[in-house]
Amino acid sequence: MDLLNEQVTHKSFGKGSVVAHDDDYVEVRFPLGVKKFVFPDVFGTHLLLVDPKLAKHVDGVKLKIERERKKEEAELEAMRAIEEARRKRALERERLLKNHRLSPASQVAFWCDPAEQDKVFSEWRVFTGRKKSGANQGEPNRLVRLHQNSCCLITAREPDVPEKDRRVVGLFMVGDFFVGKLCEDGYIPAHLEYRLRLSEEESRKILFWNYYVNERYPNNMTWNSGRYRYFDNVWMAQILQDIVALKEGSAEFELVQDFLEHFCDLNRLVETELPRPNGALVRNSA
Image (tube, rainbow, N blue to C red):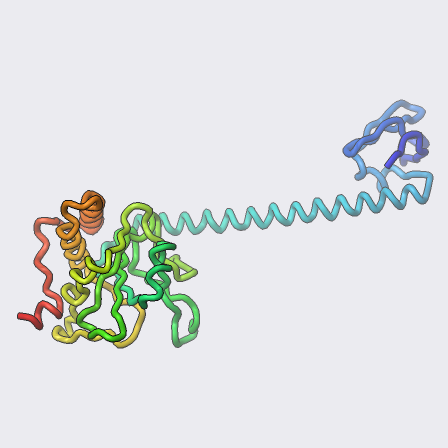
């Protein structure tokens, strides 16, 4: 748009003509001298173009710029709101981590169908499932016991084998700064380092029921419903200890040994003082 030499009027400076302009400013010569204004903001308020067609065109440009500015302001405000929400979540997470009291059963074992395992171990996260009843039906489960000291145990059983043969197919510590109470989408992310998938041959040597026992029904080996079960800290350490023995001499030995030491440190367990596994399968075999 060319405004050069166009005639204008100003409330205070009177009549004038445009002597220079760009996308940001316009300069007008008045009888008292040259004045500089912000473009196109000044038009329609303090400065008026004499040519009505050109004035209408400038009004359109001004309206377009105002809309763009409002859009940018709305986007900035939305970003500020997101950042503020993140800040509040970070503060809440920090508070929960600081005030966290160690639970004796802050581990969790998941039942995963064989078809689901590849997804769990490729994405390195596991879904908690959805609530099946109550006011929050359909919403993801929140595993409030899970904290930085928690480990997720992935188990599987083929449809044609008995429950007692349920295998441990992998496990991982939860991601740094994860707090189960604050997990909204139901996905538990794995730690970047402390995570492991067992081969099929290895998993057949780490049977879930060697470690797990329902104290109310110590001889029962049933998992009829539910996607997950909270798991004792000591039992998880026993599993890791047995995996360390299984991996001795392999390329993964040091990783698993570090995994065990890290887990014991976080859960205030002494590796050399761990009792031998005494799950339902062990008890039934005695």
